[in-house]
Image (cartoon, rainbow, N blue to C red; front, side, top):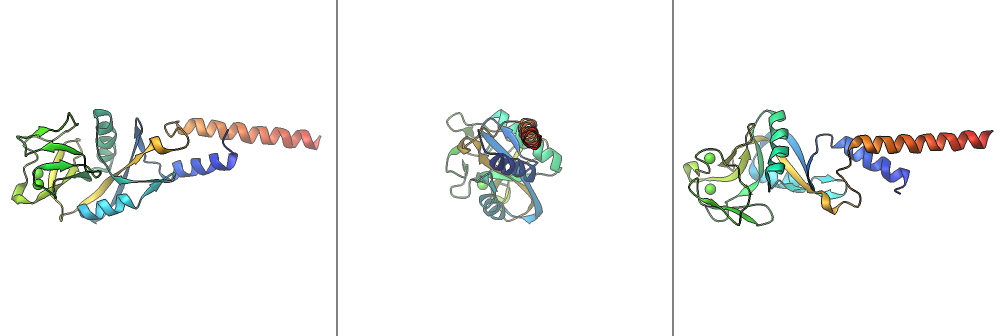
Length: 193
Ligand SMILES: [Ca+2]
Ligand SMILES: [Ca+2]
């Protein structure tokens, strides 16, 4: 049983990151701002923390994760940076941890059965310099010029590294807190009688 203090800290962390959406053991957070380049997004995501975990610019590894990211982007109302890039080698699309998920342009193919959700005719490396991945409000992926800007990026946290199950709904934490408070009240009353 976690101490009441720990539970309170976890609850506060969840409130502070109210927009975290989970998909399995992945937690996604949308960070909005002005004039965000791809490198801004990478640095910003790496500086974010959630319950002691360090974030990274989001990878999207399954349809379930795509749904979570898509819901955040749709709510924001404009496309956002996520963590795919082919800046190192044109046509080799990799997530932030180096895992390649796509080879080639729109005529290319997924690598190792990795998930993808490219829009029609993407990636097209328009102008020869589209090396950063964006997710649009309908969820479709596009390669985009990394020095141009977006108004948001999506952070991924590996919730599997948390000491407590992070996918517990907020309501459960509230209920546990209420029970602890009631217990404390009862004990205080009993002591007073
Ligand atoms: Ca490219
Ligand atoms: Ca493109």
